Amino acid sequence: MAAFAIKSLVSQITAKHSPSDRASSRIEIKSALISVKRRCGSKIPVLAASIHSESDQTIEALKKKNGPLSSTHLSNSVSSGSCLRVAYQGVRGAYSESAAQKAYPNCEAVPCEQFDTAFESVERWLVDRAVLPIENSLGGSIHRNYDLLLRHRLHIVGEVKYAVRHCLLANHGVKIEDLKRVLSHPQALAQCENTLTKLGLVREAVDDTAGAAKHVALQKLEDTGAVASSAAASIYGLNILAEDIQDDSDNVTRFLILAREPIIPGTDRPFKTSIVFSLEEGPGVLFKALAVFALRRINLTKIESRPLRKQPLRASDDGNNGLPKYFDYLFYVDFEASMADENAQNALRHLKEFATFLRVLGSYPVHTSMV
Ligand SMILES: O=C(O)C(=O)C[C@]1(C(=O)O)C=C[C@@H](O)C=C1
Image (cartoon, rainbow, N blue to C red):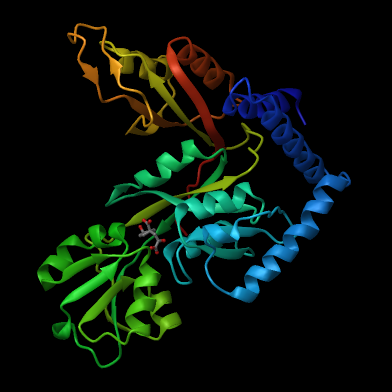
């Protein structure tokens, strides 16, 4: 493998950890190199082998329990394994499960109660990957996952786009006019805003679309429907009252694929890089930050800002009369270039000159096909 690729892998990992946290960097670099060796056909080192057997026991115990992972399952567990285990949020029949299967057709999709649980299950080696929604063409960004990307130390290793087609589901014998309320994931409810308003249904948000279908079925509700997939209808034995009820037929959710180790960025196919940074206060600083890409003709595909939490209130020194400053932001940017590309490396070096914080979340192949 080219030396620059290993160098870029190592610098991506080191950039994630604070300088005082060298131990974590070393562990992660070691495990990334082990995986590289494995991919290159070398023997699996003892460290990784012992990890396998421990995790297999854990996953067997989990399979017996046959329920979604919760934070209580996340103790003392480590992993990897021959067949890829992929965490998703929700229960069986959730769109996230289909996205996980689209990303890894032969994977074992592992349901998790919450997004945090999916992040943690990768960190603690319970699973190999997590596939989590980040944005939807109708509903916009899934902010929780932006926040969790920063709170956890995983790498984005890929993306998958999934066409979401919502159905209105109800128990057999229930007619559309019998319905008073409808349950679903808040994003799914938002994506069907027009249809649900026309039907005059009271909306109730739950953790995931398939969970809504399961609840309606288990409780044998007669005045309540669920917005979920046709797969959820067949899993939970519900009737499909209406199909394709999203406000726009082109309803696509983009999911991120997360792993403990970054992938080696390439230049053999289109790559995308996701970063997060913060800036000093001042006129034109965001303009200056974005110019580092524009100057090098690097196309940006997404920009998202999130409040910088746990930031002590800062008295402004920029003519704000010393009033406390409440709004500090993190900027998440996706750009169309690989970290193996010198142009992208120069852009980030330039950004680092004035960014108060910068982290590369991942450099990964662009997902183009919708099939
Ligand atoms: O509830 C589900 O089925 C999910 O997979 C979650 C989710 C989301 O979080 O946005 C995923 C895709 C759809 O956009 C609606 C809901």
